[in-house]
Image (cartoon, rainbow, N blue to C red):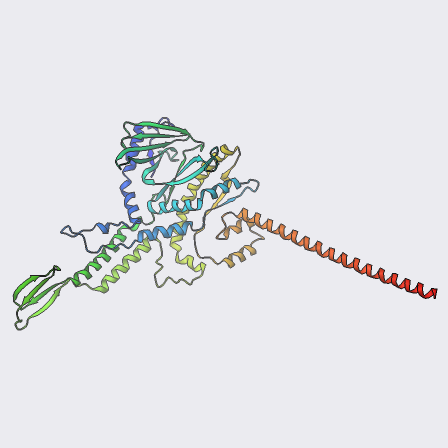
Length: 484
């Protein structure tokens, strides 16, 4: 998460003072517990696994139903199952150098991982950097990567604009024996990447390792937000997830308890007790007296009420997280695409907020890429004219979409309507392919027409030659008759 700093404490953001960096590191450490817990829940390491009895013994059964991962994965696929589409609104500008670079970066996979962090933590950090081209050591390539928000953050001022001052990435160092050897701390300013080694996060006994210039023109780290409050998609239902896991675990333990229940005998007298090799106790008793009886000591529960409680908790998990329950009997799988939108209406509403903040982060990304592309290639690319589109990953009726595109050509530009197709992320490229296809078809038709004309002319020539041959034969015949 970003650290807010009063501008008076840092006169020169290009050279952040060590005490300022130390303060920011300590501020960031205060949020590590929350992020670690959220990451653990996604991985299935829930609090129920650490639950103990009053005698400080572990429960026999601790069950985890990972609704947290279900919610995160559902929102991630729903938001970015269809790749982000970039449309150039200025037809005179060629953005092929930009789209080729995104394809080389595998930006689709990168965006999915970025969205997953957004759904887990409520925010995610993206780092821009340059490295040597693996195919040509004399060339450099522009790279983007998602970095762990538990070890990185952006520092902004406290103005309403929240201007970025610098960014920090820190990694714990270890020797070959696994012993901790301090931290590597990287400071990203608007012009340089400064690398330090520090014994601790107090940033004392600091040694500067390197100072490398970059050409992104801004702080090369972008903080993406899931919402204004930076809350993850599954975070509001943590207590419900815990309640569900505890209840399921208790039910499992109740079954174990009934299997190993204590037998109570009324009206019997004990003769002898012997523990066998398996640890079980065998009891010898005398013939019972009148009205003697036996029963198991168990905790009787109304299973119907328990089932209703479990169902209620599960319904609340889906209701609060906006993720529909696909196992619900009311959730039919054979509905049309339009009907499906009403099934996930609340999820679509939540997605609107997520998309606005994700697009805001992409615009910051485009500024960095535009700056470095212009410097690297000596061009004047303007990526601010790009239209950014995100489409939810919903079941679609492709034939219906194609029909709508065909019917709308008179009043909607083709470059816009082609964006309705689910698998099209660059409508301009599709238009160029269509134009090329039309040209090829026209050339093929011209060749066929030309070939047919040649055949007609050849047939006419053959007919003419045949007629001339007949005329000559007739003349020779007449000449022969005259001589006789």
